[in-house]
Image 1 (cartoon, rainbow, N blue to C red):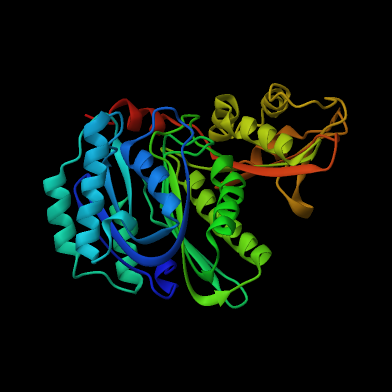
Image 2 (cartoon, one colour; image 1 turned 135 degrees about the vertical axis):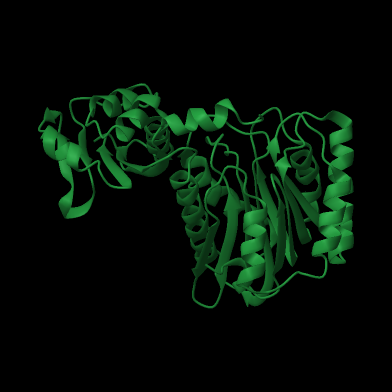
Length: 383
């Protein structure tokens, strides 16, 4: 499980008080971030979009239970006050203390509670599995499991924790992701690598089609492992983000199955990504997977409305992967065995592979099935 605290120079702590949690992570180094594309951006997002330009973080304070979103000028002031609380607790410059929030929109932070929690954690930061686990739990809302990832490359590592279960859609999703590496990476390279990694991972997850106000992915490079090849770093960061993204999709609110859609043969990579996201975001596809209903026509229909040009009678579609993949359509010809297709949908992970036969672009997107549990959770989210 240990990931971020496997990185030299990273210490973590966290506490959960009912619905309200607080996490502290102390790690000094070069920093970059990517943020939600929602026009309604939470106050901590607004603050971080400005402060990340400094290119350096000394630590992080993150709370759960209150999003501090649509809170106006007071929200911005509260986010800055929270950074000051985190800076004081960790002994770092408050301007270099990253801030993130998640929870209910349209409510103000309880700064007194956050202050008490931070002071209680100030002497508890630790470079071990328990400290990391506490921090990962502290930022959970409707998540059922902690989410960790560690990629060990040749001479350096990249690791991360995240939270996210509902209100997940591209650009990015209701997710907080905190990534760390011991590689020494210059800020422009770090920013470009994070944007690409997020685009190929977090921006390809669809749980319910709603883009949050609070989404943020932050990366800090402590540099203790020295300089590394930028291309190798880029691949390691992408792998770490992908591992976290898949965990978010698998833990979607009310979900019973992870859906993976691999699209090949698109005109360009982004075309493939658009088609894959459209399929995993389709409520009809999601409910079919939940009911183990091999209604493969829903996949073809979703692909056709994605806005990408291809010949419907040239496509191939299968369920599963590798030698055990079961063909449903081969070069436009229906070949499905419905009984076998239904059986192939019984596992916890359902994979569809779609070849558009229209180019060399390929991409993967992830989602989950849509169940009564999702309605139960979100019908009573604040009550």
